[in-house]
Image (cartoon, rainbow, N blue to C red; front, side, top):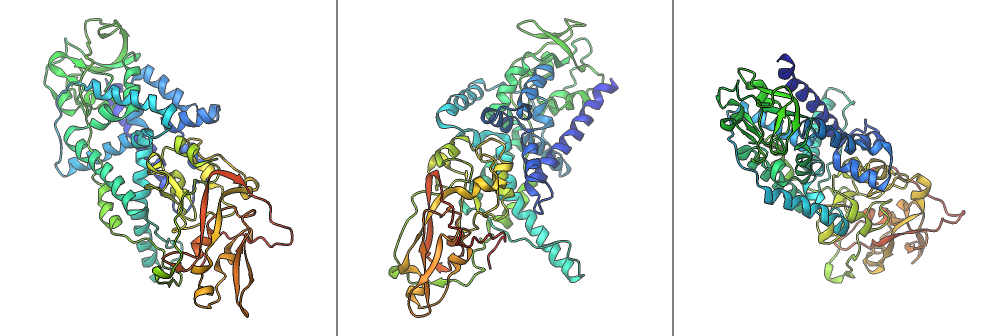
Length: 532
């Protein structure tokens, strides 16, 4: 019996290690974890592992097979040992109990229609619409959105406060980092989803995991024929009800000694609280109606129905107020505000997907919006889309030249992408990918309107596609060579004119190949996070 009771301790140690490692991959603001290592951390998750294998068949991406085999052996242990949403709910549940917010659970019937409808829709929609549903339902993607949009800005605020304090004592090992928030709408959507999951979890336990999550439903189907299962001994059970009241999945009905193992997440809490050891985790055999112990075929019975259980993300919500009212940093440079009625108007038609994504449509079909690329992007140019890609690409990363530009030598997004949506590139390949083309609007340029020298766009153009030519007197003005433009957005980002900039990048829906700059043109490679 000591072995059964130690199962929960093993689960807790494993889960804490997993959530810490996954969180660090997103919150690593100093870049301690190499991009390749961050990717390998992410493919410990089922969906990223599966999608990576689909795009690049390799033994490295076979973790999803191990999860399936583990479910066949011992049920949905993945949901409590590795799933970041599940583990995080466990942590919040523990925090809630410290404030006497503790829920006693009761058995509830399985909502089969909802569970299997969502699973079928997800499977059917993938060949047609790609990851449209997965990006909203995959637990790793949800945790990634939460980490990047909510936790990371909060973490940066703490870091900057410590850096300011350390500076007073002449300590320079902690450095302040500029906070660049996602779009306000993205933050609201993410916070709303997390709040809803949290609220339902506090009241109903793991309702999301066992009624909404398609991965939980899939692993639950496999778990019905698991080799090892939790069972209640009829002869030893005193019907005290402790197991049912602590079951986070609401899948134990102690009156009938039933356990709906398809919804059990192998947390082993019931094993720990059982006073007379009538609940055991042991080998079973499948009879068609019930699963029984091989040692005692009358000892255990299982019911295939019920609901869910688990607490939630309350502690994470502590970060929300400071994030929601934060400001985007776009005003470090001197801005030239012009009368918009006198400016030449334009509107972008195509926004840019990350280098290595081949095309906007291909990216939208394969990206799960886990935001690992957003978290690791050194220039913060990758930001969650609202409707920049249209409805099918909502929440997926795009190149936002209001917050940064794509560094000429940077290939990190392809190195960390866990699903194959962004292909891995070397620097030579990256230099020739044309994400879009720059367009110069002379009527908006301060050299034209104010007679003021500028040249910021040319200074920061890595290929000299934006080159300066004589204009009036000693003044020069940009001229664009679109054939060597790679669409990195450096020119648009540094342009000081507002509200309409004098230069902007129109994306290529399908990424093209740029020409190499001429040998007599000096290529400037900027690696700084901010050009001023």
